[in-house]
Amino acid sequence: MIYTEFKELVMAAAASRGLTEYELYAEEKENISAETLNHEISAFSSGNVTGACFRCVYQGKLGYASTELYTPSEAERVVAAAMENAASLETEGEAFIHEPGDTYTKIESGTVTEPTASGLTELAMQIEEAAYAADPKIVDGSQSGVDFHRNRIYLSNSRGLDLAHENAYTAAYSSPIAREGEEMFSGFYSKLGDFAQLDSQEIARKGVEDAVSQIGARTVSTGTYDVMFSNHMTAALLRVYSNIFSAEAAQKGMSLLAGKEGEAVAATCVTLTDDPFCEDSLVKIPFDGEGVATRRKDVVKEGRLVTLLYNLAAAHKAGVASTGNGVKAGYAAPVSIQPYNFYLEKGGGGTTEEMYERLGDGIYITELNGMHAGANPVTGDFSLASAGFLIEKGKKTGPAKNFTVSGNFYQLLKDIALVGDDWELRPPMWGSACFGGPSFIVRGMSIGGK
Image (tube, rainbow, N blue to C red; front, side, top):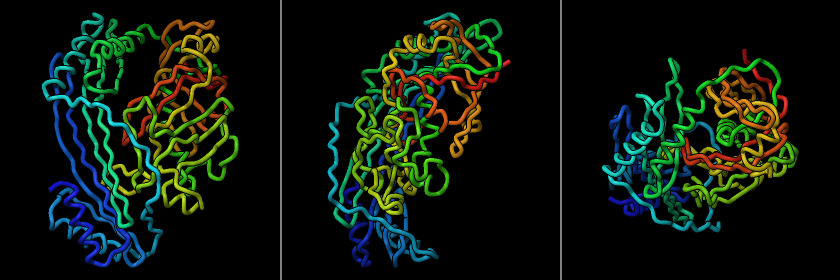
């Protein structure tokens, strides 16, 4: 049974039980992936996940139930189960079924090349072999991988919403290992795009360059340094700290941005944007997990906090409109808050090399490790094992390793002295969220070294 048939059965079952406030949210996911190790395919998987979640308002409470089966009996069961779950709740909470009337941005569906199993494994092997061929220092332990994803979302409710959208893309990566003497150096590069457009040579070459560039790394002395974070690290920091921009987190006391909308929270060179239709992203979302139309928004503009991110519940509590950031991590997951394509805007500081010149003497950080333990997403404090390059007299000289950068993300936003133009959006790491931006410079950061 296809979704549209199942939807009609669920709606009929809900109506027959006298429900007037209800919603059906469904996902259909397709995935095919291959990984290589030591010149051969080490893993291959292919699968489909289909599921739907029904939620309804019953006796003034909101109940949920989900299923992975599209059958007449399951249509009856999820409705009954959601009503039972609502009835068993001890306290009433706010229940939100979105009204129609939003204007939804139409996403032009370009051509998507869906790879065959043999084509996908062939590309993975091409990346692997290209990495070995690129430099004799590349040794066994090197890996590559290719993943194709297709995700369809459906949302229908009792108030007349009947929405659907689809995203599809291929992600490929190279993770080569370089050896110099007894030391090993791991590189990484990933690329998101249409399968037919991915270049195995480019992906392998950039992964190898990352690995080889670390050879000969020096330690640095403990002290205060001017620091430049690479565009990849801009994305990494935004990924870890994006939750501080959630209105739900602020309302629960888990963000220090609570009550600061309209206030200066960053340097004037900082503009942070959440754009579900970013031209450089293959993940475009016209409506959120509650059926609210999504839109581009400046979260921070020239240092001032314009808005937090809201779903319907957080917006109701604050007395404002939802920003369309009610997101479900999966069809059965509750609605949370998350950005879509969240990035630091270009700042006029120039290319990466021009940013080196503006830095003068300092450290260019290209790797931050231990985010899960060394970064506190509530207080903003961080102390992270890092690696990168020394910048001397405006030039990148040699790699640096085994040092720790410490600070506080809230203060970091205020201390950004210059933002570059070497903008890049990184592939999604979880859910639908992509993060990115250019490199940026912070003066006088605490570095722990030898």
